[in-house]
Length: 114
Length: 112
Image 1 (cartoon, chains in turn purple, cyan):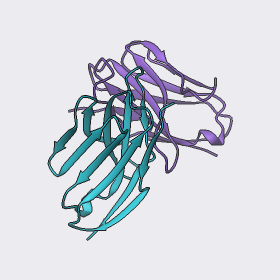
Image 2: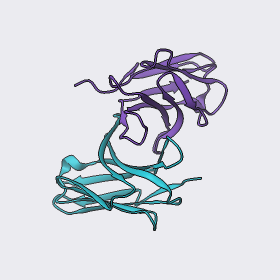
Image 3: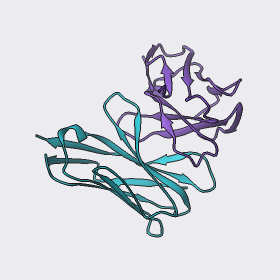
Image 4: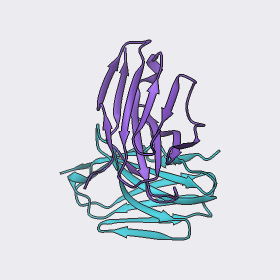
């Protein structure tokens, strides 16, 4: 069965470039989450959607980070004017509603900003 | 603010030994706790989920306990195998929120 998929798997960006990371959740999963994982650390929450509504964006580190899920399925995380500190693995997860259900994670996108 | 700590940060054992991984959290008002496995360069695989009302969950060689009042969970892996080598992460879901708060992980190496 299809799990959570993310693309691209790897992205190298020059400092100052904009990037867009895509997440395809498990079909039928209402809740979608983005996390950021720095090297050697646990993931940290970025933002949460229930269907197309962004209910929590408290973890987005700056206004350069923007996430959307316009039709309640696929989500895109956009980072504008990338900086070196943005280098990390970006993980997407989905779960059935309510969010107390188990979260299923994608393979992540490794972003390297040079 | 919830903080999750995993000790030890790294663990190396010979094949066949039992593994004991510890997770502690500062705010006991959690909804559930999940244990994950992460292989190098891969995403997270959910191993066990314990609801706040439960004391433990078991799946094969894995057993996780939860003591919510003391803010602790322990993951036991019986009769370890080299294929168990990975990073193990615990994460808690707050009753009042939707996000998972993760520990820093325990990196496990099982030597043949």
